[in-house]
Amino acid sequence: MIYFTSDLHFGHTNIIKYCNRPFSSVEDMDKALINSWNEAVKPDDDIYILGDFTMRGSGQARGYLSALNGRKYLIVGNHDLFLDDLDEAEGWFEWVKDYAAVDFHGVSFVLFHYPIVEWFRFGKGAIHLYGHIHNSPPAATKIPSNIRAFNVGVDVNDFAPVSIDEIIRRANKIEIVKRHNDDL
Image (cartoon, rainbow, N blue to C red):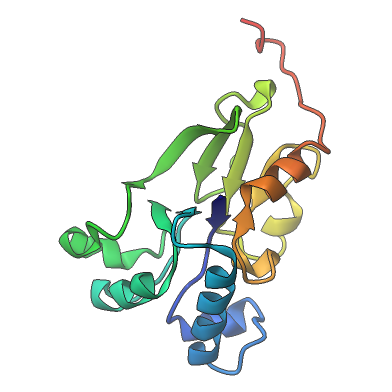
């Protein structure tokens, strides 16, 4: 199975307050995030992290990564400071990229930490997955609901990864927006 997630912010005490997360401490939050991840993601599953895994250093990032199931792919977020020591991050991810356009199950996906207005193959049904905006207005309320773009951040997905099946189910409810040059 393939999963997506974003904005875990492991070890970030202030994110509890900033995003009104229902945890009494960073230790409780980290434990709940690890449990939710491992309940969904099995060791042979693929999981795409769309940024902001942790603001902690590479040593602590390694501890979180070793506790989590699955083959991990990372789209870099603005708070992934542990990547400053790339040698320490190598081997923990199948790849690390700023942006990715990939195909799964015959569907095109554009993976980016930030929400964007249009993306590669937009008018041909591609799905854009992003994070960054957590659950905070006004940004979260300005993303149109009639486009095939989904926030996979933990703050809007019950603090758990989202399966590709769920993403495709959501996308299939939305008509593909055509542009005048989509047939070129």
